[in-house]
Amino acid sequence: MLNIKDTLIGSSAKNDILSGIVVAVALVPEAIAFSIIAGVSPLVGLYTAFILGLITAIIGGKAGMISGATGAVAVVLVGLGIKVKEALPPNSLENLSNSGELSNYILQYILLATILAGIFQVLTGVFRMGKLIRLVPQPAMYGFVNGLAIVIAMAQFPLFKGEGLIMYVLVIATMMIVQYFPKISKAVPAGLTAIIVISLVVIGLDLDTKRVGDLADISGNFPVFAIPTLHINFDSIITVLPYSILVALVGMIESLLTLSVLDEMGGKRGSGNQECIAQGTGNIACGFFGGMAGCAMIGQSIINFSNGGWGRLSSFTASILLILFVVSLSGYIAMIPVAVLVGIMFMVSIGTFEWESGNRIRYMPNSDKFVLISVTIITIFADLAIAVITGIIISALVFAWKHSKVRSRVYSDGANTKIYEFDGPLFFGSTTSFFELFDLKHDPKNVILDFKDARVVDISGVEAIDAITKKYKEAGKSLRIRHLSEDCKQILKDAGPFCEYTEDDPKYKVAIDY
Image (cartoon, rainbow, N blue to C red; front, top):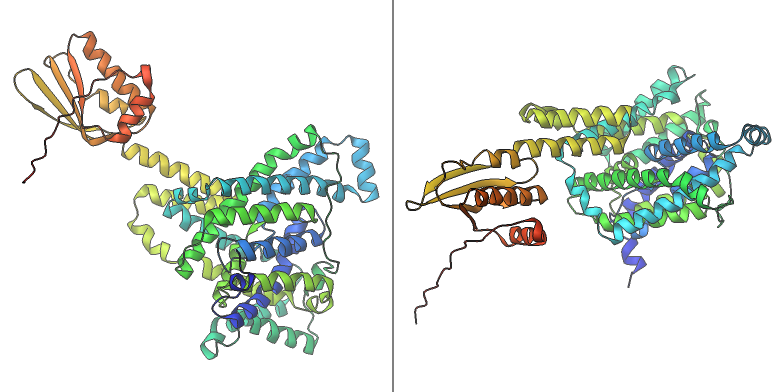
């Protein structure tokens, strides 16, 4: 049975609570920005940060990981919004625009897509497919982290628009506090110290600089349960289904990669399958309570970890405080200067970037260099999911190419027997080199294929064995197979009548000393 107290309270409640305060404040501008990107009210993103953050704090696969509305998911939802508008008749589109209801109309499709995406994520976790994150190669991980660090920094640039020298000075001051305050004291997180100090300076001197309240009005009420109001039928489901699948994939990839990064920072392994279930459950709840889809936030998660928020209480605190900001404390949060949040995010970007990869890339094979650089560039200019999938595909193709040759040692066992002793995997990429090893015309009557150091991997390997067996049979010669492993025998057996072969495994007798 789940013990809520034990689940939430980690090794240091004080650090978790203080770090949660920093994260809650830092979440506000991001939640607002990603809502605007998706074309919905800022409250939608704030509700997502509260609901998804709360659920993943309690049942997520990694303590201290922060979840909420993210840019990668918001971009997918932008595509859904465009699709919905294109499907509307011109008169309906004009009427909805004039009445101000277009945003709410699009939101209903976003809510439905969020619920479906959550269902896909839960199923992924239930069927234990979260472990597929292991397929992401290390160069792709470096590329993902480096690209995301650059994206985090670039996302702050629009906030400088219309600002003067004061903004730049405050950002630099914030970065200096975050960098050097821990050397003075670690009793209070450096991020929280920066927020308090810079806010007091700006408010006390009444400096002319952008505040959180200038971005959007964040005041509101607690989210309430509601079923999406659109007419749910086959057409509406078909409209949102491709975007739901993409949201689910993007969310799981970003969440599982964030989990991997935090595993390296904390040295304790999280559960990918549990995280998928938590993300899915959170997104389903978001869909029914007026929030859009979201996922783990690597920037906020690193802020949390860097400030000592390693327990579940930190992310729980952040989500609870966020909704309190919306309901009760919006006036105070509105006074916080944007510059301090920008400075914190710049420090997150610097801390996220894998600077060591600059040294390691010199010693990497060219293929790994290409993967690292490609994933970094695609993450910056396109999409995280596309970047990571591209990295996996390139790495898989390189692996297949490197293992596309089967080698053999040939020797005779008597006058009429020739043995081919293979080394390497027999799969779709190596069947051509496998056929090139044989000398059908000059081989003796008896031929043995020894798979002691080789493996039959897939159906292409099975068909290669079937084809070479038939060729020797047609030439009036005998071909037998020796030393197949149990898994190889099972693959050949499963092929049934489509694979013809004869085994020649020697029978070994064991001497017993009585």
